[in-house]
Length: 287
Image 1 (cartoon, helix red, strand yellow):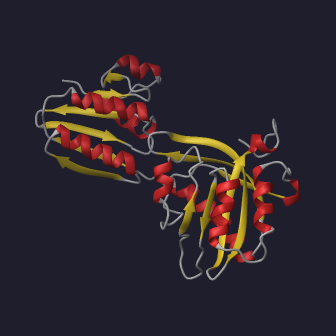
Image 2 (image 1 turned 180 degrees about the horizontal axis):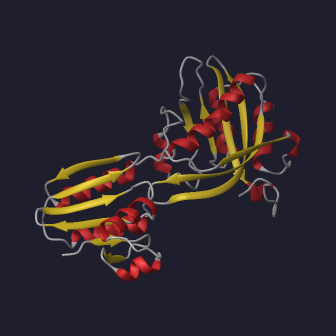
Image 3 (image 1 turned 90 degrees about the vertical axis):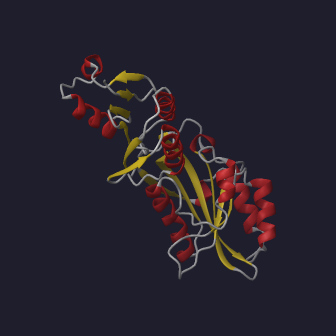
């Protein structure tokens, strides 16, 4: 009995389908073609054998549609034990006693997967004076700077509530620690759910699903902290998120060191879409 390939749109195919192979101009034995689809095309595979089912997948390349198709396809199978082969940096294998146990395990991995593969991240410094006076970054910067050389954390939160538009992250760098502890994370970033942003408080900034993006982004915080300088930069980047894949976007970011009363130096980041800064303008280094 043939197995099933779940394609990038969530559609189901027999894993011996010649039509599917021809659509990719491939002429491979079925096992090799299935492995190629899982490793390179974001497909999932359900193999059938006498002693059970074998699922192979790569969670960091799977779309939400593919994952939904995989869940539905498993529900249609007869009860059996399931071997799960998961590709992250390397292949890992586990055996579960039932389809329901396999579904629970796949859901847990899919919702908590992290991606180590790098997308692109390009940043270009701008003069602070280049910010338009009517955009929120300029108003936020002026409000915080007018508070004086030292400001209370309560006052910072009040300014962020009024002018931050939910797009801000406040961290407390510590020269003795490699990570950036998050003090507050705004709920206005489209790529992060409000619940996820709320859970970041007290966690390391670097603990994001796209680890490479987090490393690149955190470097700006550290530079602003060590130099004690306000930074404005245009960023063109891409990030990966479980179930959504990799998304490309551009934004302008403000990085502002803040001396908090009795607590030391914090760094605030706030951003806005490029289109909100200069309509119709594109970054010279966009690819």
